[in-house]
Image (cartoon, rainbow, N blue to C red; front, side):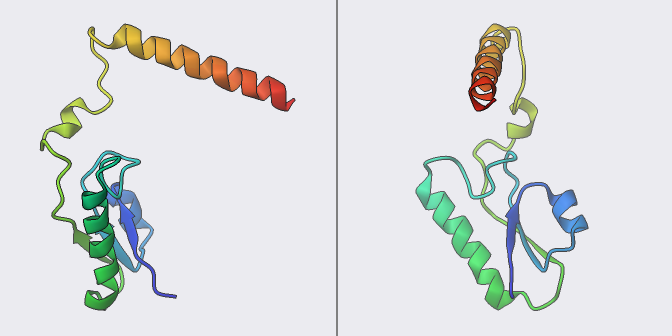
Length: 107
């Protein structure tokens, strides 16, 4: 069955030797583009589908021309600073509490 993979972890996906790979230089978890940016998502999916016609050699990687916005997103992605440290700690604690409550209900 012909397959194509869209992803951001280039080294991992290439190591797995997928037949066709559309690499997008985006934050992990966002391989098809920014949330709610349907035009970007559509372009990425269309580019991935086009690989079925254009790629005939196994283990081929094509780099998407789409950009996340600023080219420096990697420098600030998931960055913890003095400005956001308290907010992130509160969100983390709320998430842990929520998970703990769900686990207790499941038990």
